[in-house]
Structure formats: C-alpha cells, structure tokens
Amino acid sequence: MKRTREMLTIRHETRTDHPAVGELNFVAFGCRMDEANVAIFKRNLPSFDPDLSLVAVHDGRVVGHALFNPQTIRLMDQDVRVTNLAPVAVHPDFQKQGIGRQLIRAGHEIAREKGYLLDMLLGHTTYYPKLGYLVNAFGASSVTVNVGDIPANADADMVIAAPLPTDVPALVALWEHAEARVDFSVRPLDTILEWVSPNPMVSAFVYHREDHVVGYARLKGAWGERPASVICFIAADESAARGMAAHLARVSGLSTLDLPLHPYSSGAAAFGELPVANAWEAAMVIPYTEAGAELIEAYYRAGAIDQRATGRTMWGTAFDV
Ligand SMILES: CC(C)(COP(=O)(O)OP(=O)(O)OC[C@H]1O[C@@H](n2cnc3c(N)ncnc32)[C@H](O)[C@@H]1OP(=O)(O)O)[C@@H](O)C(=O)NCCC(=O)NCCS
Image 1 (cartoon, rainbow, N blue to C red):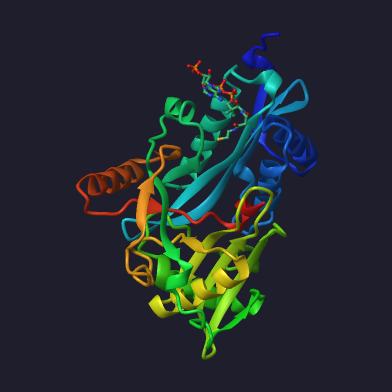
Image 2 (tube, rainbow, N blue to C red; image 1 turned 45 degrees about the horizontal axis):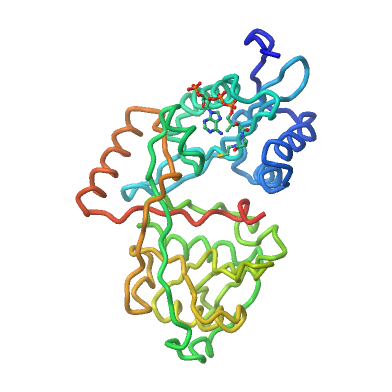
C-alpha cells in the first residue's frame, strides 16, 4: 500500500515510544539488537537531547526513528559542536517512501537551530550523499606492531586496573593531551560511562605509572572466527604506549597488534613507523551552517594537499554493544 504524506507525523520521541523504537531498530537492522542497544545506551548519556531523537508515526504506529547525538569533536584544532546520526531506521514495510529522508531533514533543522555546526556519521554511501552528505570525511588510523619487537616487561612499572569513577578527570585530561590534535576525535564526556563498556566481551584498562594515569585501552575479546582487537588506545607518551602494548599482547595472546593510533596522537612514534590514517567513503559529514561548511572545506583542502592527515574517530563505548 502506498501511504500518503498526510498520514505521517514526525515528532520528538517520548518515553512511551521506547519499546516501539527498540522493536523497530531490531527489525529494521535485520533482527539484531546492536543498533537498538546503541539507542538505549545513548539515551543514558548526559549529552542526550530528547529534542534530537525523532520518530515517524503512521496511523499511531512508530515506523521510523532517527537519533542525533550531540558531541564535541576536534576539527582544525578547534572544539566544534556537532551531532552524530546513529541509529536511523525505517520499518521494512515503509522503506523507500521518503520517511528516512523526512526524519533526517527534520533532525537537521532542529540541530541547526540549536547551533550545531555539522552532522557526522558512518553509513550507506548509496543513501546519505543523496541527502547532501560528503564522503571520505574521516576514517581509521592504526599502526601494526609485531609483539616480538616489544620487550615483554615494558609494563613492569605500571599499575593496571579497570576504570573507576575517580579516574574520570585524569582520563579526560589524558585524552586532551594525547588526542586533541586529531581531527574528528570526540571529546569524552565527564562520566564513567564513556570509559567502561556495556559489552562484556570488551575489557577496559587504565594504566598508572607513579600514581599518574598514562594510558587507557579497550580490548575486544576473541569471538567465534574473530580474533581479539584493540578498539581504543590512548597513551600519554611513547614509553606508556610500549608498556600498554606489552600488556595487551599478553592478555590477548595476539602475535601482532593493530593499535588505533593516529599520526597526531602522542605516543604515535613508539613503534618506529608512524600510524597510517585512511579516509573511509562511508565516513560522512554534512554542514548545517555557513561556518560548518567553511570549516569542512578548509579541512578537505588541507587533506588534499597533504597538509593534514585525515581525521579518525575512536567510537565511544555506546558502539561497543
Ligand atoms: C536507510 C533507511 C533509514 C532509509 O530510509 P527510507 O525511508 O527507506 O529512505 P527514503 O525513502 O527516504 O530514501 C531516500 C532515497 O534513498 C533511496 N534509498 C533508500 N534506502 C536505500 C538504501 N538502503 N540504499 C540505497 N538507497 C536507498 C531511496 O530509493 C530514495 O532515493 P530517491 O530519492 O532517488 O528516490 C532505511 O532503508 C532503513 O531503515 N534501512 C535499514 C537500517 C539501516 O540500514 N539504517 C541506516 C544505517 S547507516
């Protein structure tokens, strides 16, 4: 059945919509809970803004949902207030009728009015460019380390523990020192939820040396065919990076480690070769304002003439689920 636009309402999500939104995300993403859990986790963050979580309602039924999460990223050495669209879903029975487009446009309008400069996301390259998103905005960066090249006792003087709420100020300061030059790195919030994972397969470690926090990492355990992987790695300096790598090699059993360092991270040169950053086509942005457009243009221009390494995001714990 073809539905008319008049039958559809786009409005803010309310508490009573949560179960329907959960079911919608489950069904739309191929009957898996990953994205439904991302939405649940994001609603718990202090940054969550219910004005930016929208539902499309057809005949009293929630048939679409889009969540724009506010965050602050570093871009061209500035703090920039942006949104991150994830997840967005339309019920399979209602797809390709313009509902996704309406939800996303409505979210853009609200975010623009609230003063955000741009939206960033990871998504279908066949879909979002139609709505004006620009591809290859950021990507991933890593360095591959042969575990045999790291002295096994490089972490001997480190105290290694799971994160505690009392560590949060030191962890935020560590990020500020280590990551603030990296474009598209997301400024962590002042909450332990940013540093512990909701996924029991993911372990988080804080590395202390002489009572100072010098590192933080998250390791996703091996699962089925998938080997263990380091999904977050923030080191105060090169020596901390080597100590952390020695520990992660031991607990993961891996013989090579792919560490998500960036050429501009502190500790980047710890392993000889510098990390390599690559843009992903699926990593997209859309500016909301003139200022956002100018910033993005300057960023792409600097990248095109090799003046700036492409940015990268270490996704927050919301995406560990
Ligand atoms: C992606 C999704 C949200 C799009 O919602 P939608 O309501 O179906 O999209 P719209 O009808 O607004 O589509 C707008 C345009 O994109 C096209 N389009 C829709 N879904 C598409 C897809 N998956 N791939 C490529 N193009 C797509 C439409 O044909 C339309 O093109 P047109 O303007 O040239 O006619 C929806 O398909 C969905 O929920 N998919 C499953 C969950 C998902 O993948 N979410 C996004 C994660 S990045």
